[in-house]
Length: 124
Image 1 (tube, rainbow, N blue to C red):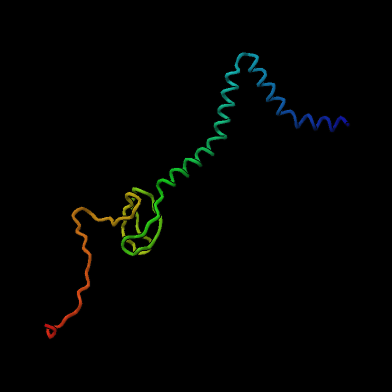
Image 2: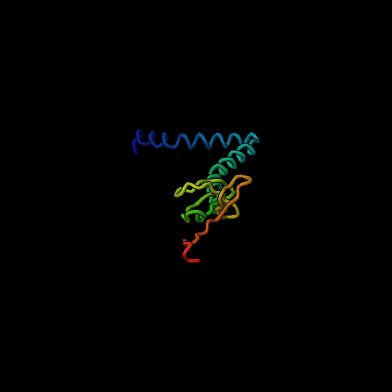
């Protein structure tokens, strides 16, 4: 093993040796609590994205609603307890109780049209 190769190996180990020396120094001074705190914070930073991902999926399962537009029967998704517009017919909809409902302002009367057959006066 040449001295040059040995020197390159020490250069690769230098950051790790420095970290180990700092941890040993803090522990010998009675600051082990600081090292433990830093390790706990580092662990939480590693776990936080996984916990956030699982939490977001849980929230999305509870709040994502797939239903049909009551006007044109086009099926699409929306968030529960929100107001949205049908992408097919443009009707304003309100998502409540996991179903789409027409959004009508206060005092609006919703009427359903009924087809009346054509009759002439001669039929009477």
